[in-house]
Image (tube, rainbow, N blue to C red):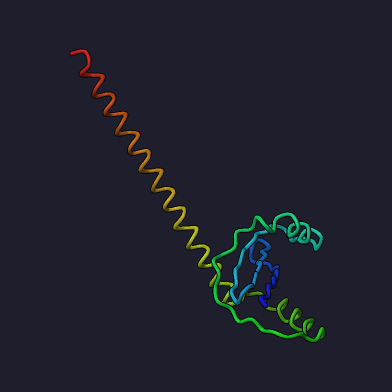
Length: 138
């Protein structure tokens, strides 16, 4: 049976509050980074999740270790406390964010290249049209 889980870590990274969504399913982790700006209240974070979760752009999936089995509630609280002390993202999260950043960068480059080519082609056609207009009367 496939399991899916998700976590949200909110931390302060000068000068903004950052949220990192981690979604794990089928043994693969995807990550999305969100900038909140000023410190978000709990209800604001909850509202953001409810309204915008499905519009988030997650990174490509990276292999992740998935641990099975029920956990002791006290152990879970301890892990939460420990993760709140830790201000850094997990290495898997960093890798996934970096992968997403590189993917978006290549997409932007491709789009700008296509736009430049289209502009170049338009200018060429304009020059050709002007040439034809000059020779039309003679």
